[in-house]
Image (cartoon, rainbow, N blue to C red; front, side):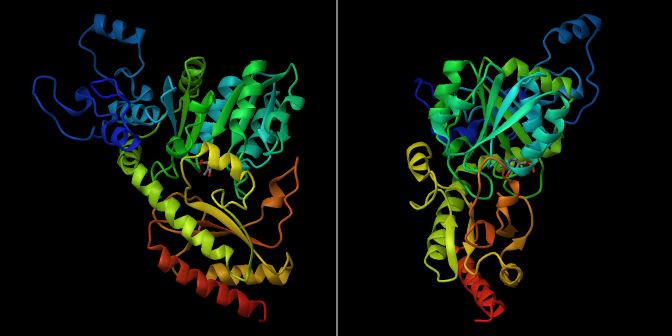
Length: 409
Ligand SMILES: *Cc1c(COP(=O)(O)O)cnc(C)c1O
């Protein structure tokens, strides 16, 4: 999005303006209008006459045609997310992040193809490779997140796509996205990224040459832990395939959910800054505690892939994990549970990216096949919400005290 003089508008400005077309916020015969596109609910669209009906069938994209093709509420959200990636030709919405990943992979892969999938992928993405994709005759080869341009050695005539997720789920290794993109471009391989952790605000993945950018909007876009949604943005070469597959699969989001996601999106820039600053403060505090063996946040210089993080990312976000000392014994597992149970400000639950902090025991080693993760102890993943970081640190202080008691110290 540019201003009248052709200058690119900043992210926060784009978030405030995007998707507010006058035809979605006003009445055709009245000047002015409301600020936000309202909730347009529809299955049937009524036509003026048969000629109008026939004309409407010719171009159904972002036009009132039938409810399954969306209404201005979902188009406004898709347009706003699309505007986060200047290279994106279009964005489709899905009823969850997993549906978005499936929709993107089913759009680009054909039976007989090979997919290169990062070993630190979100577990349901892994499961999709073993289940859905394998059933459809696609072979998956998992690769080391730190492979960089070494990915060339895994590419064959049958390699159709490379899937990245950076930083990786649970352990937060940062990938060398430009190096992988360079290999893929040279060999005509399609690149996809699950960019949920950073969003395009912190990692402009398509600007680094990635073809297809996927978000679990459930997390930071919605930001309030009350809507499930996913999105896929694609460049001009891949947008028609993404769009047609999503329509073919009948993917649609409810207008109420789209409206809530659009409301969340307006504050994404300031929320991400706060999540990131607070997470870094908590991560640095944890790294200095005697009970903690390691902290896995990409913004810490000790983290794996930090050089790529410092080069490619515009800032930290709020999800990271840490390992406790005491090894990986059953007693230490109980002590980890005591820590998590004793926290008052951190909820215990899946998902993340909401305004409220969460703590979750995680065991990443189970979800790997191409690499080993040598965990020094049991891990806890934290979603740092919008609370005061000093309060979160006091809560974690209590948690570490509970851990010490449980360890008999
Ligand atoms: C949560 C998550 C997803 C899936 O999103 P859902 O909306 O829960 O289906 C995908 N990728 C990552 C990295 C996630 O954290």
